[in-house]
Image (cartoon, rainbow, N blue to C red; front, side, top):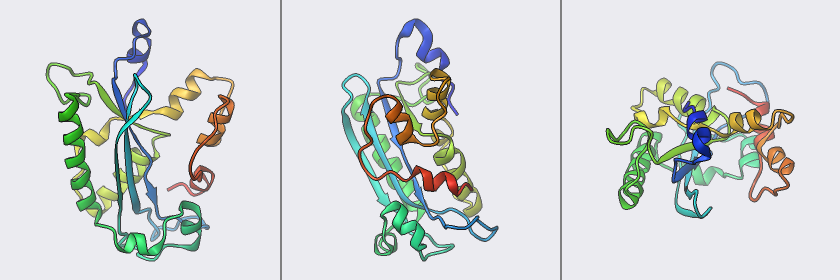
Length: 203
């Protein structure tokens, strides 16, 4: 996980120009996960957010076909809104990572921006991944790639944990999920919220 304390506090200057926000969706079940039930990514989405304008400038989205337990549970379909036909038509996780890598390199080159530790002239970088908690990149993607012996790009090893930063700043509030943190800030969540289900079924 990327420690942003110095970046966020040094002269109150935000050093990142962009963040790439990710929220992976994975197979899940209503009961406690057994050893033979492992999360598999079924949707791999990301958006490039311009921190100066607050605008989304690029998007990546790909459905991924699960192979260990190909049939989605009813709970998973209702929770994520992702159907069996969508994942059946999806690509393998390995192919998905390759497609994402191509998309990522294109948006970085077009804007002349760099991820942390990838440019010898700018080790801090000007863009970073951001997720709500460590689950997406630190647990879900990491465990599945290890289990399936898939090559995972090193840039997935660093990210901004927005939940951790939120809880450090708002010490009085411990949100059970992302929508709750938004409500605390007087904001309204847009889209399909399902963090409660996710945290009820940790890997």
